[in-house]
Image (cartoon, rainbow, N blue to C red; front, top):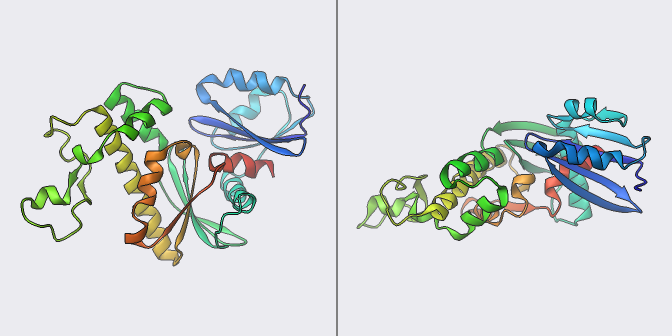
Length: 268
């Protein structure tokens, strides 16, 4: 039987993340929203006196169906406080001021300082894009399968590059830059499903990075902290988000438990 006094829960659009302390150690768990029954069963193993601190878009719904007492925590406050906690716990060398990019089903971008935060903008491009378009491209419908496909593909076979446009002449820009995402997917018969999945991840990463970099330029900061469940085990996406650091002069920071920043923020 678990003896947990308080649990932080981030109920997002696709996944529900859980954080709690047991015997002085931080534990995290993830449940897909289409299997909420499993989460409810796990919570039923806990004392009825356990306090739930809920955040995220599905927090109100979850509060109404669980037996334990629940308190709703502001989503953006939970996310930023959880990120600050993880930066300290994981000893990440990040200044008190940074751009925070939360890549969940969609994406939110914040300017965070030592004692406050501001949500600057958001995008509908994120994990939901990866799952939805990934299903249309590959027929696969699990996150891990889609990431594995992307990891074995070559986006340059599907994306139209600057060098493709100017060939056979030398391009005026770096030739490996993307001129059009999926710009030759309909032309290159050698491109296969992993290549198109790699192009999808490239598209998501480039789009989010451009938005985050514009925010960093506006606020005159260089460090960009990326969190969110879409990054969990997603090596191809992390590579894209890191790949322009020298050219665009920013520093990409990833946290080991960044997928649980919202749940941890709700917990603390």
